[in-house]
Amino acid sequence: MVFLEGIRAMTLQLLGITKSFEQADGKSLVAKVVLKDINLTIDDREVVGILGPSGCGKTTLLRIIAGLDQPTEGEVLLDGKKVSRPGARTKMGMIFQEHALLPWRSVIDNVSLGLEIQKVSGSEREEKAMRYLELVGLQGSSHSRPYELSGGMRQRAAVARALALEPSFLLMDEPFSALDPQTRKQIQTDIIRIQEKTAKAIVLVTHSVEEAILLADRLVILSANPGMVRRILNIEMERPRDSMSRPFLEMRKEVLGLLGGG
Ligand SMILES: Nc1ncnc2c1ncn2[C@@H]1O[C@H](COP(=O)(O)OP(=O)(O)OP(=O)(O)O)[C@@H](O)[C@H]1O
Ligand SMILES: [Mg+2]
Image (tube, rainbow, N blue to C red; front, top):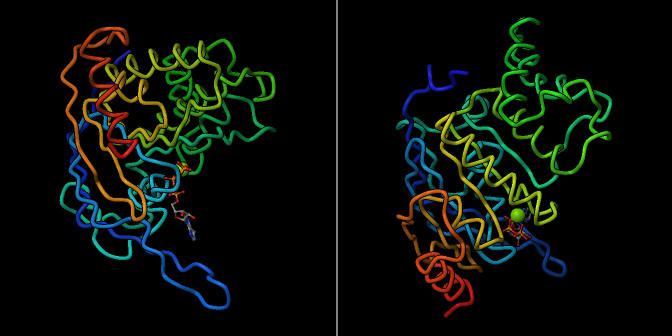
């Protein structure tokens, strides 16, 4: 399987991203600043983990990166060009906490849905969908319906669906939080393998400090109210990483300290 061909280096830049939402406060609407002055450059093939307390704006940030929502101030640049709908979507693959597969479609038809919308021919659709199903280890379940799959298999199908569109960036919003620890471990290993094979840049929002240190090249730690970059940490450890090793445990302690406000 060759996945690297056709992949082009891309850089994603977040420049001064600020986002406010109008929220009801008794009888009037007030603007609540959710994200404030987020600056970040994400390089091609980089895995960036985003950590921060609940409500600090992680999902909002991913939606802005994907072009699903617009910042109040600042901009998102992809290779120096402004990201706005709908062009951004072809470069960004989103994977959400809930897999959101269509229950009436088979696994392969779910994976090829985006290609269908892009009017890719039937045979090419099937070939691509099978290729990505194989990559996530679901080739034997291509004709099953989502309800026949386990939670972990459904999440794998959602990963295959995002990959089938061959995005430059995979944006993941707590994709594995509903899985049991064993399945989660397996899928984390799969993500490392998939990332090595497909050379995607990944932006991973997670509440798990272990998961972030296991997978990311860089960690972005956000503070809340408003969501701001508190610290960016580079992770130099070789992969696969040992979560019991001293550097891993030291980093974990540092990150937990930052998240706890310490
Ligand atoms: N469409 C919206 N309208 C108004 N407020 C919103 C909207 N979307 C998000 N918010 C507010 O923005 C803040 C950040 O929400 P967001 O979902 O981005 O947080 P999060 O970091 O992803 O949280 P969690 O870790 O719980 O998923 C919250 O206070 C939320 O109420
Ligand atoms: Mg969220």
